[in-house]
Structure formats: structure tokens, C-alpha cells
Picture (cartoon, rainbow, N blue to C red):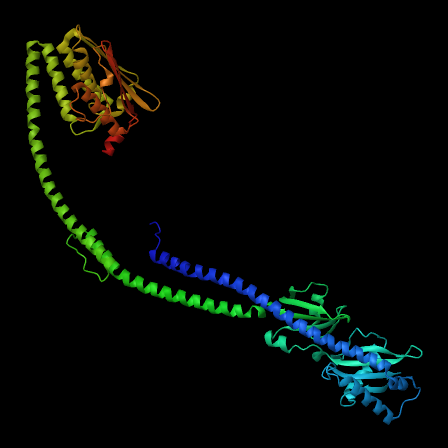
Length: 578
């Protein structure tokens, strides 16, 4: 059994498509538009933060640089650093307190950022500038920086120590202004976490990374080395893939210092809002889809219940129970189906009664037909008696006429209920007819039948196709002609058809007066010889199609040729189609 599609499945698929496609299209449009908007917002927010942070950090570094110049030019500091002996405690404290007041009182030098300023000579601590005095931890870090980074000398660079990752250092040679010789180091310690304020960006993007690095790529603080390495040499304002994640990156160099501030914001955090929205949207889509399918399933169940009852009634009707009827249904559509079914059942019942009645009448007609066949048998018996009497009297001519007439009548009865017969039967029937006509016209009528191939005799054609043409030729062509005439029947086979040609040398007629495509009785009363030709042509085309039929050529006073074009019918297919 061939697989049939389910209307319920098709309806469910259409329902899913009608819900999912618009929602998905809306989600894609919303996602792309909102993503672009969120990316623009992130770019503006990070750019604003970077400008503010760079300005503040640059101001801090400028203050550090100015502090270095101040320490270089302070006479008391020059005197202590140039002396060969260490100053006494009282003098050193006085100088430190004066420097602290001069440097740290300024709001640009934030004590949360600058944790210590030290002047060191020959590895010995000489001066320290702190708001609250010297701390042992700071002094240890400063001495470690002097020991590890003592050969550094730059007011534009910041350096770090591996053992103290939370701090960075600015290290500059302290110059004797009289001799212009380096006599010590100015070491300024800065707290890396306070150098760049990240409170604002952390509030907006909690997973953002702010990296402080030197322009050579060395990280000063605030992030993994992979961030600085990924951003080194790359243009800002784009997205970078770092450790398998995508980050929006922008940065700025704090000129004239060789220090960079780079900000990295995860793409996932930028799009977190839209991802959450799409998740809610997806949940809503699934919810609407499930609810729709449940409602559709419920409606299908309610609708299919009366349909199942209808199918049961139809099955009962198919078994022959014509009394079955459908009950009223609660729905308008199914009620119309039930009404149509009941009307059909009523018509079937009436039709059954009518057919039954006609069957009885047909049986009665068959009895009548059987009874009517008594008369032809009676006629054959009488003709047989006449034939025997003629033979006994030596009247062979009359005997031949009676025999041909009997054979002609017998053929009429034999083929009475057949639509098609073989060429052999048709030609035999024609011979009986011609022999009777020859007895009538004697020597005035000559005929011949030419058959190209004996195999044609087994082909089929509509009965009484050739005989009416022969009769038409004799009655309307040869009989009006003085002195009689001849008739020729030629039958041959071509590539895909059988050709039958009936020719006479009679009086002929005007072919233009014959319309072979006219229906019988149309257009007024036609001449009787023309009607016969028209009926034969119409019957051939009804049986075999419009490509077959009859053609006529005739010249008044010179005879007539009638050509039939018939299909090669070897299996009597026309009879089976009737």
C-alpha cells in the first residue's frame, strides 16, 4: 500500500513553520540590530573611560616627573646628596618633612598612587619622602629596586619587580648640578592598582581588563601577559581573539611617557544583555509553539471524533448496508458532511431500487428476445426447404440465390451484438451481397476483390463498414448508368494502417456537396447516399479516433473512389473498449 501523508502532521509542520519562521526572522533582525547597537555603546563607553583614565594617569605621571625636577633643583637635597658623610638625624628629618610638604600637598600627586619617594646613594638610604613617614616595607622594596634596577635611568619609563607585582618604579639618576655627575638615584614607588582607576569600567563591564604596559610590551600591571602580547602592534578599536575568547580592544599611549593603557572587554559581556533577551525570546517561542501544538492537537481530536464516526458509517455503507445514516454532529463543517453522506445514501438506495427494477425488466426483455429468435429460425427452415425443392427440380440458379440470401440473413443474426468483426467475415458478407446483386443485374455487374496479404483477413474492423460502401456504389453509381459497370474492392496494408478502396465506374457525383464531418440530421435533410458515407466516417472516428476515416474522390460521369484509412487492429481492442 502506498504511503499516504497525514493531514495532522502537515498541519503541525505548517503550524511550526508559521510560528518559528517569523519569530526566528525577528530574532535574527533584533539580534543583529541590537548587537550593532551594543557594540557601538561599548565602543563609546570604553572610549570615554580610556580618555578619562589616560588623562588622570598622565597627570599623575606628569606630577611624578615634576617631583623629580623639584628634587634635582632643591638646594637642601643637593647639599645632603653631595656630602661625603651622612647628615645627622635631625637635619635629615627636617629636609624630608619639607620635601613631603612641598610634593605631597599637591592634589595631583595622590598618596594612594605614589607610596614613596626615595633618594638613595651608594646603596644607603639617605632621604625618604612620605606623608606618614618611612615604613619598613616600603624601604625594603626601594632597596630591592635599587639593587635590581640600579642601572636604569628614565623619567618616561616604569619598571617592575617580579617579587613585588603590585608596585612599579620610576628610577632616575640624581645629578650633581655643579659637576653634572650622577651621585645617586631617585626612586619613586607607585601602586599599580591605583595608577589607573578601574572603578567606572568595572561597574559597567565586570570582566573587563585594564592593562598598563610599556611600549615594548612589558606588562606593568592589571592583566595577563597574553593581553599585552595580543595588543602589541595591533590597531585599536577592534576585536582580538585571546586565549580562545573574543575581546573588544582599545588603547592609548601616554605621551611623552613610554607607557600604554589598554582596555579589553569580552564580547560575551558586551552582548550579555541581548543573549539574555534572546534566551527569554527562545523560551517564549518554545512556550508558544508547545501551547499552539497542544491547542491544535485538542482541536484535531475534537474534530476527528465525528470524522471517525463518519468513517465507521462509510465502512458499513461499503458492506452493503444502505440503511445506515449519520447522526447530527456538533460542528457546522462536519454537519454538512453528514448531510451530504445521508443524501448520497438516499440516492444510492433509490438507485439500487431502480437498478433492481431495470434488472427485472432486462430479464424479461431477454426472454422476449429469445422468443423473437423463433422467427429467424423459422425463416431459415423455410429457406432450407425452398433450397431442397430447387435442387430436386434442378433449379441451381434459384438454389444459389436462396443459399446466398440465407447466408446473408444468418450473418446479420450472428453479428447482431458485435461491434467489430474480422476482415474475413466482412468480406464474406460482402460476397453474399454482391452475388445476390449479380443475380439481379446479371452480366451488367462485374466485381473483383483484391487482397494484398491473406494475413489481413485476421485483422478487425467495425462491422458493416465495407458493405454499405459497396451498396452505395451499386445503387447510386452503377444502377443509374446504362449498360452496367464494374466494381473493384482493394485492401492493402501500409506502415501503420489498413487501406480499403472501393472504386466504381458509375455516374459519379459532386464531392463538394458531401460534408463527412456533419452530424446526421444536422442542417436539414441531406441526400440519402451522402448520409450513408457520413455515418460510416463518423463511426470509424468514434471507434478509432480523428486520425482515421474516409476520403472521397469522384468526377461526374467518370466514377467514384472511396478510400478508408483504418488502424491495424489485431487484438480487437476497439471491441474491448466498448
